[in-house]
Amino acid sequence: MFIGEFEHNIDDKGRLIMPAKFREELGKEFVVTKGLDGCLFVYTLDEWSNIEEAMHSKPMITREARKFMRFFFAGATNCEVDKQGRILLPQNLRDHAGLTKEVVLAGVSSRIEIWSKDKWNDCNVYTDDEMDSIAENMAEIGIFI
Image 1 (spheres, rainbow, N blue to C red):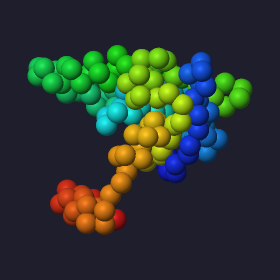
Image 2 (image 1 turned 60 degrees about the vertical axis):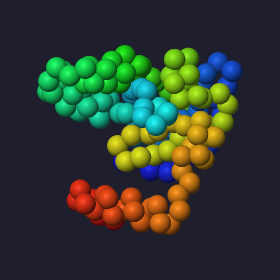
Image 3 (image 1 turned 45 degrees about the vertical axis):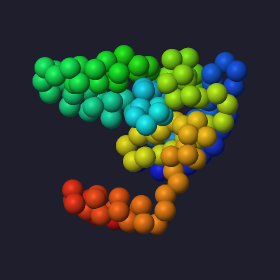
Image 4 (image 1 turned 90 degrees about the horizontal axis):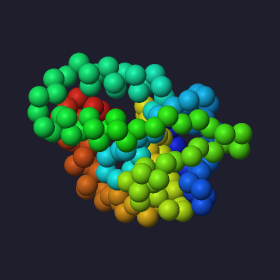
């Protein structure tokens, strides 16, 4: 399980340090793809395999399903950590998430999300009332904290 929030910088070649805490769980090879809300999603190979299996078991008769499959899978790339603990993020993925320099890596249970620091700060401002409302909606679908 991935938890925590880490700030790092992307260098001019598109390399990003993967926090040691995350590297241990990711293993030697993992998958980075376009995520939702303007970030990137990072999955272990096992989790990626589970996602592939779940998606392939669904009918692809709707246009939305096919669009999502293209968005999610065509944008994906296999990554490995180099000897300095960095990963190379392809330009198309950096463009998707608006990654230029300052980046936030967030552990979100079964995945890691990679955000531009500005977008992360903009998307993660909640009032107490907003979070109470979100928590109530989560409870309605059976998720309690």
